[in-house]
Amino acid sequence: MTSPIGSPKKPIGCEMMRLSDSQLPKGVEAPAYDRNAVRIGHVHLGVGAFHRAHQAVYTEACLSAGDLRWGILGASLRSPQVADQLNPQQGLYSCLVREGTKSRASVIGAIQNVLVAPENPAALIEAMADKDVHVVTLTITEKGYHLDPATGALRMDDPAIAADLATPHAPATAPGLLVAALAARKAQSLTPFTALSCDNLPDNGGRLKQAVLDFARAQDESLADWIERYGAFPASMVDRIVPATTPNDLAQFAADFGVQDLGLVKTEPFSQWVIEDHFAGERPQWELAGAQFTDDVAPWEMAKLRLLNGAHSALAYLGNLAGYPTVDQAMANPAFERFVDHLQDEAESTLAPPPGLNLAAYRADLKRRFKNAALMHKTYQIAMDGSQKLPQRLLATIASRLARGQDFACLALAVAGWMRWQAGLDEQGQPYEVQDPYAAQTRALYQKGQNGFEKAASFCSLEAVFGPDLSRDPRFVTAIGAALDTLLKEGARASVEAWVQKEAAL
Ligand code: CS2
Image (cartoon, rainbow, N blue to C red; front, side, top):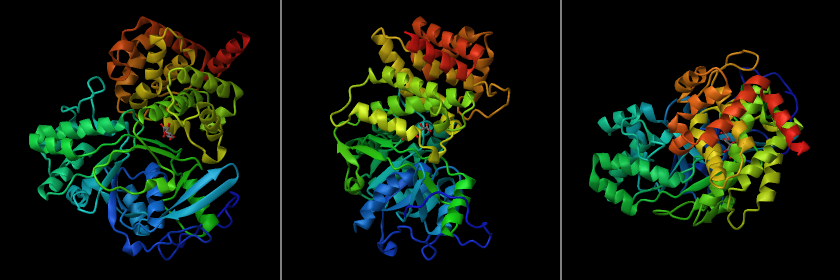
C-alpha cells in the first residue's frame, strides 16, 4: 500500500490491538502462505532491525514462492527486547519502506519465534543442531567476532571467550554458540550448517570461520578438523539503510494502520545482498528477491565499505559535531555534499570494481539515499562503535592512498572527526555518551596533548584501531594532527566549509 506520511489521524489509546495473525494492518500486504505449515530451516543470530529489514525479507520471498522449508528462528544474544516485541505478535512485524513522501508497508511472516540466548543457550544450540536447519546467518556487529585486529585470531583472553571456553555447554558468544551447535550436529552425524556472516566487515566469511575454528580447536582438534572439512562460511555484502525505529515511528504506524506493531522496522527502497556461492548444504533461493551469488564478494564489499560506510562515518562525526542530527540534514548543506563527493573520489581511486558494478551510478544512488529525509537516520546511531568501523571504512583507504603517494585530505578530516567525537562533549559543551567498546581508552587518549597535533599523536598509538603501519607513519600522524587541529580551532561546520572553499579556489 502506498500512502502519504501524514500526521496521526487519531490519538493512540492503550486499547489498541497488537499486530498478530488475526490483527493485520488494513490494506497492507501480508503473508499469503500457510504460516502453520512453515518449518524452521534458517536460524539468525542478532535479530535486530537490520536483519528484519534485510535477510528476513529475502527469506520471506522464498516462503511466498511456496518453499516452506525456510522459516526463521531468530536469536538475540543479549537482551530480551526483540523477543518481547515479536513473540506476542507470533513473529510478525511490518517493514515500512520510506522515501520522500512515499511509504509502503508489508507484514513479514518469516520469523517464527525469537529465543533469548542468555536465558536458554541450550534451546538455541538444540535448534541449530536440528536436521532441518541448513543455514545460520549472523548480524552480530563488528565486535561480536572477538578477533584480535592485529593477528586476526580469536582473542582467547577476551573475558567473554574465556568464559565460553570454560563453560562450552552454556556459551554466550556467537563463536561459542556456533561451535556448540556444530559439535551437536557432528554427534548426530549430521552435516554442518552454512554459517553466513552478514556484518559490514571485509572478508566477513573468513573472519567468522577463523573465530569458529579457533574456538573449536581450543576445545577439540577433531571437531575443528570436521568443521574445516565440511563446513562453509561464505562471505557476503549486505546493503540497506535501516535506522533504529523510534517511538514516533511506532505511534505514527499505529495511527496510520490501526494496530500496534512493536516489531516495526523502517527502511529505504534500496536493498542489495551479494553472497559467495559456497554452501555446505541446501539454501533458500534468495535470488527470488534479487540476491546475487558470485565467486568473489571482496570487490563488492570493499566498494560498499569505502564509498557508503566511509561517507556515513564521516557524516556521522563531522555532521553530528556540526549540529546535524540526521544524515539528510548534513547532506542538505551543499558544503557537506561536496565534501562527501571528494571523500568518495579519494576512496574510488583505491577500488577495482567488479564487473556489474557501475561506480558512477552507485555513487549517484548513494547521494539520493543519503538525502532520503523520510528515514531520519541519526548521525549519532552511525557514530557508535567507531573503533570497530574506522579500519575498514576509512583507514584502509588511507593506507592505499599513502602507498601510492596520494593525499587524503577528506579522509583525514573524517578520522579527525572521530577523534574529536571521543571527547564526549559537543561543540556547545553538551555531554553525550560515546558508545564504543574502546570508549574509556579513547576518552583518556583525547585528554592527552594540548592541541590537535599532540592529541592525534596520542590517538595514533592505539594500534588496535590504527594498526602498526599507520600508527608509525609520520605522514599519517601529521596529516591527522593538522586536520584535528583545524577541527578544534574552527569547529566541524567551518572546517568542512573552509575545505570546500579552498578546493573550489584551486
Ligand atoms: C551505517 C550502516 O550504522 C552504520 O554504521 O553506516 O549501518 C549502514 O547504514 C549500512 O551498512 C547500509 O547498508
